[in-house]
Length: 159
Image 1 (cartoon, rainbow, N blue to C red):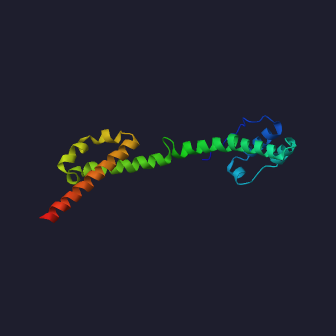
Image 2 (cartoon, rainbow, N blue to C red):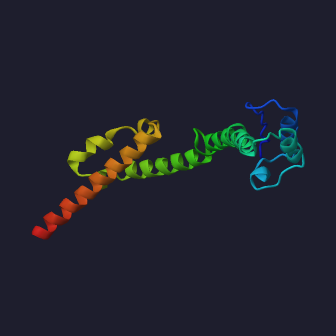
Image 3 (cartoon, rainbow, N blue to C red):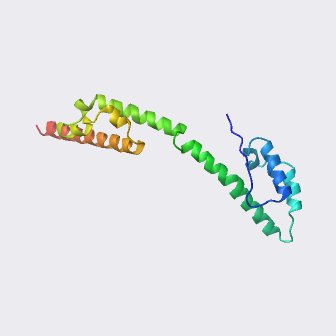
C-alpha cells in the first residue's frame, strides 16, 4: 500500500504556491512530480511569485522543492527501506539466523578444540544479539573454521 505524503512547505506561505503543492499532493503520488508531471497550478504559482530577478525566483523554488518536498520524502523513504524493522532488516536478520543456527549445529565438527569455547554460547543468547554483533560472530566462526581447515591441510600434507 502506497502511503500518501502530505507536504507542507516551510519556506513559503504564498497562497499560489500552497495551492500548487496541495493540488500536486491531491494526485496522490509525488513521484509524478519528480518525473515532470506537474499540475497546472505550478504555472499560476510561478506567475504569482514573479520577481524582476528570475534567478532569485528559480533559486527560491528550487530550495522549496528540495528542502520542503524532496528531502523529507527521501528521509521517510530511507527510514522505511533501511530503518529498524524494514524489509531489508528482516531479510538480513533471517539470513544471519540461518547462518548462526547452521554454525551452532555443526560447531563440533567445524571448529578446532581451542575455538570451541567461542561457540559454547547458547543459541538463544546468540540470536538475541544485535545484527552487527551477529555479523561479527559469524565472521569469527568462519575465520576459525578456515584456520582449522588450513592447519588440518598443512598437518596432513606434512605427513
